[in-house]
Image 1 (cartoon, rainbow, N blue to C red):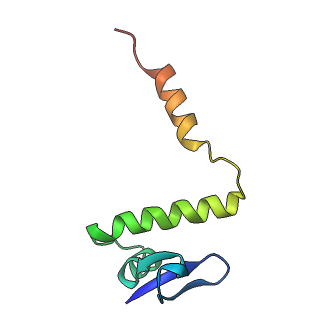
Image 2 (tube, rainbow, N blue to C red):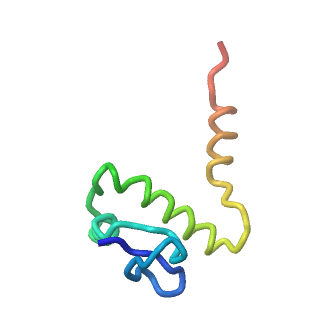
Image 3 (cartoon, rainbow, N blue to C red):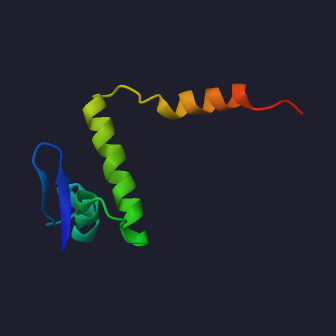
Length: 79
């Protein structure tokens, strides 16, 4: 069964493309039970988690990746 994830309410049964972000029930169950999702559910879960983070940051930028990149550049050994 497919679901749409609504930020204020969580997953609701998928009704069509106007519903929003589509996620399979198996992906949501894997996330809820902290088990490894099927490989074909991974992309949908990445999209879902990125959308949730963006929603909660309310337009602000999550700088974790840029911090990691800048620290790895400084930490890289010189040839």
